[in-house]
Length: 308
Length: 248
Image 1 (cartoon, helix red, strand yellow):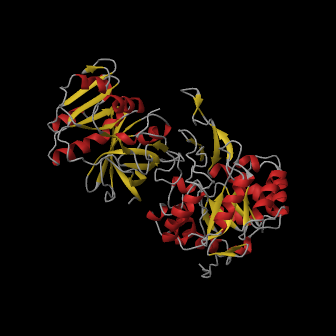
Image 2 (tube, helix red, strand yellow):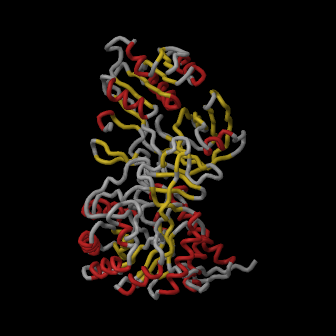
Image 3 (cartoon, chains in turn purple, blue):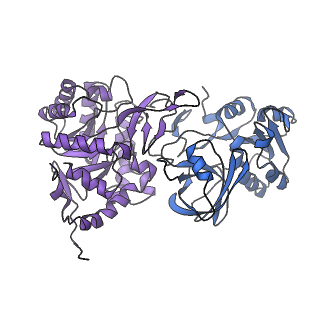
């Protein structure tokens, strides 16, 4: 069999070079250093760290997780130590084990909070991209409520852009009527890129106790089951917008990465798969070259949006 | 340290109406203490099943598990020589407090499992724990003979009174002389742990049981609030000091 020995997996997000397009999604990899006990995480393209807010948050009551066919529902509720502790304690620990550009996932409950957190994280050298989380389904009065309306997305993007120097990517929720309208509105307000999708609002009921499994009743559904939904939205948004798109949702294999890129993603985030198998990203990255050979792809960037 | 590996089923048998014992052969170098758990990938189920170590040696892991849902039902149908993808070495287990001479081991239901290895480790450390095991009914009683075989004073309670003390594990303690114990190690359902923490008048360690997402600290699905900030049951736990826990 003829082998293609040149495997160029590198991609560029708004001037940020990644050795490969595989990025653990926010909330599924902590701040990286815990996962480095499993493998050398420097093989990753980047890491999107745990969604961070101004104040420390404990998050929602337990149970926070429910299993589903080909996926899971979580309702963690943005548990994080707060932006100052992230900068003082988490980033230094992350820096010890991960020597590549990182993506800072920032969430909030008001425009002021997003602006303050983004301004602070923008000054951190390791941070290459700020990912604005306007799509968390597990908190009230923040997170997703900003991401379901064109005007509020535009407003938060405009205000944050005033105080940062790094590229701003907006992470979008699929829980909207028209994701293209939201994406366009983020782009027009100055977003440098988009990341989609966050989790789908879902629910399970324990039929023995007749009560919702999750204490918060509803939560974010993710895992392989949502891949076709995510892929469809990436395809729609990347056709409608000119900024780069990070594809996220149910990605579990090298072929999923390739399919997501063909739909229009420049890079790909892997979420729930890390929770089932802590080696998921490593196995995806290591199997990409063979998959590229099989499909006669010499440079991954060549396939971005080829299915349009 | 923890690691993913493939393990071979050496034994998988029902030992009580809803309880099975599974012995897995494979690498055990990452197991460091009783109270740690493994996380088992089950075909057809997205999340792994976290199961406490009951015992282990250089090449095998013994697990006791209740069949409570589809995932554990799939496990119960595994045959000798079948294989499982397992993460081992997860969580912080029990540690032996050497200054106490008369520990109690308090187990409820399937929570008795991690206490067996702990009992042997305590014996090896020169301590002879008193063992109190609680079950719903006599048919559910497991491991009592194994504790007795270690030569330990072992009591059983059943909620329906069909064996031993009628009532809960805490009712067994009412029959013990005051001062006959000075520390405890407990594992069982949450109501039992709450009762133990609130009524047993000495310090101790408790192993919690919470619904987990990943089992290795990444998802924060099993975080609890403690007196020392939030902690992940899977990562900082599942064993906590009594004074760390907050009972609502």
